[in-house]
Structures are given as C-alpha cells and as structure tokens.
Amino acid sequence: MFRLICLAIGYAIGCIQTAFIMGKLCKTDLSKKGSGNLGTTNALRVLGFKAGAVTFIGDILKGVVSFLVASWIFPDQAFLAGIYGCAGTILGHDFPFYLHFKGGKGIAATIGMVLCIGLTQSWQLLAVSYVIGLGAAVLTKYISVGSILFSICICASAWVFGLPMEAAVVLTALSALALWKHRSNMKRLLEGNENKFTLTKKV
Image (cartoon, rainbow, N blue to C red; front, side, top):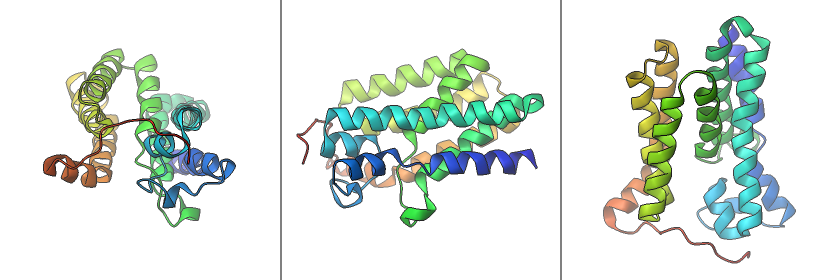
C-alpha cells in the first residue's frame, strides 16, 4: 500500500510542470515551440538561459522533494519509499494529466532522484551516472546522448553496486521509460539529423 501512496504523492509533485509555468510567465507555449517538449532543453533553446536554468533546477527539486517526502512519511521503508516517490514524480512530469499526458522526458527529475540515492545509499551510482552522462553531453554536444547514457548507467549501476533488488527493478523500469521517451532522438542520431545543443535568444 505504501508504494501506491508514494507513487501518488510523487505524481502530484511531478505534475508541477516547471517548463509549462516558465513558458506561461514568458508568454510562450513551449508545447508549440521548438521541439514541443516540456523540459529543460527546449526551455533553454526557446526561452533562454535564465528560464532554462530555473526549469532545470525546478525539475531537479521535484525529484529531491518527492524522495524526501516519501521517505519521511514511511521511515521504516525510507529508501524504497523515496524511490517510489521519485518514480511517481517522473511519471507525473512525463505524463501530466492536465496537459493531455504530454510532458517532458524526466531527466532532470531523475538527476534529483540520483542525487538522493547517492547521498543515502550508493555514491558509486551517483558518480558513475553523473560523470558519464555529463561527460557524454559535453564531449558530443548532444544533450540526448548524455541523457541516454545517463539512463543506461543508472540501470547498470543499480545492479552492479548492489542496490536492493526491488529498487533496482524500479530503476531499470525508469531507465527503460527514459530510453523510450528518447526514441525520436535516437532515430535522429542514427540518421545524423540530431541538433547539437546551442543556446538561442528568447523568442
């Protein structure tokens, strides 16, 4: 039962769509601009650095807050509760009900989750996923490449570094969801049509 409660709490937090809110404040509908994705990368490209940075930080905080809240409510199952809380947040971010279930790709919220995992359970998972994900994005200049490798590293590290099996299964499912959300990016990468990351002026 605590799993469903944590998922519900996380989903409610995840539905706070930072990119959508920033777009409204900037009088821009991000779902109709750029890639149409309600996430950090599109916010950066369309709205500029400041709005993009706020979106990024806001989405990271959603992952952190959901982990902390779920862990606090269920202290006897703190780590697992936190994982389910974050899972709900990622689902809420990716599929917000009030936006016809069209949201972002959940990477920033996942970054928040991984930070909490690193501080409470496995610093190795945090280090490997952060270093490889960020390194790939910087070296290739493709945010999607960094996001994809980041997701793969989370899944692999969960098993390699011995996280509890249930937590590892949930993280594997979340990694699979992230890869599915990036399927169009992977297609463009294979075709050589993926756009490298550059900041543009606010439109």
